[in-house]
Image (cartoon, one colour):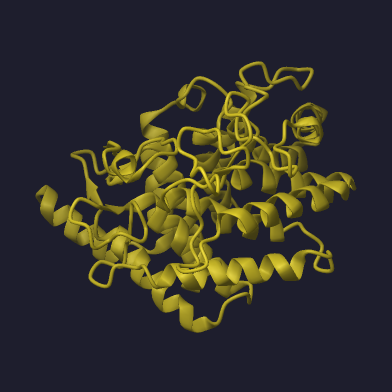
Length: 371
């Protein structure tokens, strides 16, 4: 059987959870856990391993848990310190979310100590004048949509796990502030970032807003909200408002799904421009969020039509190498804030951890929809 026949057979026969496992196994074969790039405690590995963790919970296959544990153990010292972590960047807080499962499974106090070394950093985090977290220490006053995924789930789960309810209010406030200042009333979409001081080189001089709706940044936001909802008390004072925010954003996104492929564009609202291109990581995040919102009752079942169309759109782009490893392409590499030309010129990569993680999250969620 040649490669094209293998591709055709596999894309027709694999279930969503099998796709998730195929992606996990491909990256496990590519990288020893300790060598996952980059060489620090960072969300690139965190989103990939968060997807793998969901696959482990669905399949109970030890190789996934052991791989996650090996990576975490390569970064957490005996005293719970995390030496290869930039403690003024939200991106380096996110992987700490993996510590909850390890603490739950092992009872090893080292994981709890590491959580207490990471999450309380948020209490003294640099903020803009309105109290919004800086995305990174060297980006003063800049709030990025990405930041909610980096800090929201880990902080809300910390509040639930250790009885520190002030983290519920903290992250609900961040989510609401972010949406308030980045939402466009015409499209319902969220701009990539906001600088209240209007000093960033990308900031609109009147509003402080980023110039474009970048797909993956928008994707992090609803995925983060839904992860937060997994641990936020149902009766929390902001839950209703956050739910409305989630619903409005996801419904707005369905209007920008490409009718032919089911995918979404790199710059979400400009699919009519010939140099714009369909991007797999944002498409995967949007599908995951829509499907999870339907499963948990935040969206009507009718929205699964968009999720399945998007899921199939991503699957249709996949290929395999000569060893049968899955190749997830059309993934935008890591990207700062810029203008339309900036996003369009960004290189793509294959099996980039951003995109592989988003793909695995999508497949794990769609496997629950398929039951």
